[in-house]
Length: 357
Ligand code: KG4
Ligand code: ZN
Image 1 (cartoon, protein in one colour):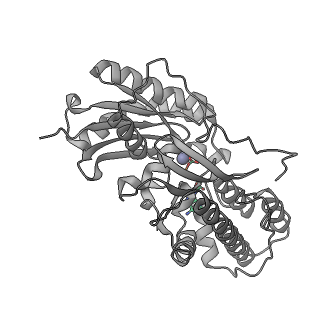
Image 2 (tube, helix red, strand yellow):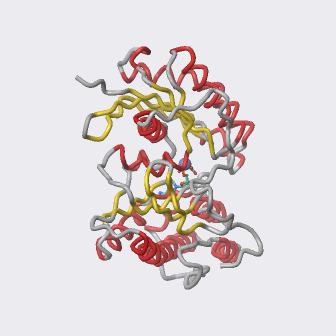
């Protein structure tokens, strides 16, 4: 019988220390044998954002314990592991180095290959842990550091269709939350507040909504939220602002997804069209509902990873590791951490003042 390969994945690109072990499962999706995530929310809360030095310190303190727990939970022996995969970028260099060095030493000690993984590719392939999806597919990646539409043509083959020209969507959620007085990371709480408010109470701007293809922009929206937040008095005002913000984001994502559908169809003449939505913000239930409705109307099959696999985790890193392992794509032990590592290396950098769309 063919051996079902086992991959250990490690993720330390930002403020989650995570280790997971997955096993190949013939034609079906891989089995997640263990998936341990230790969040540093309590370390960074008092500073209102991730402090790199503290994040790195916390990864150092926890990585071996988390790895030990992942191995114990999986009920496998060290010798069963076929390769060790770790996030090599993009992310905070001090944090990346810890997971990367741990993975390299571990791979060396068990005499198995090491595989460097792009964190964004982890998000891009995360739905493959639960669904069978064929390439190519359209991906909307919405996380704390990235917001992009991509044509996923294959493993390592990405064509960027659109990107944010300023803030990432998760960042916009977190900043709005901060202005309303919600503790870091406030993104998920905005969704809760929004349920209690009137979504039509504030008329917020939708930057570049009618131009710039499926590129996105959230900075003007943030400025509008800042102005309103200075005037709000009651709890109800806060709920109304959260609801109006949530609705504005949904409108922007629906409009821009429609543009992305067109772009995707122009480049791919295929019958079964998937629309994958991944990254931390994809756990927002209201966004999920809106994008599911839109996709079905436009004849795309919407695919979301389960909520626990939307935010940072190591199962998605192991997933990329497994796909690379099957193709014999191993990396050498001098693979460097890459704080900046775009999925589509050919796409032009579209951030900052002076960007013309
Ligand atoms: O993918 P992720 O865990 O980390 C990055 O790679 O960035 O995404 C984290 C981001 C944070 O900005 C967080 O506030 C946001 O995802 N987020 C949400 C929700 N859950 C997490 N934003 C809106 N609604 C949510 N339910
Ligand atoms: Zn992420």
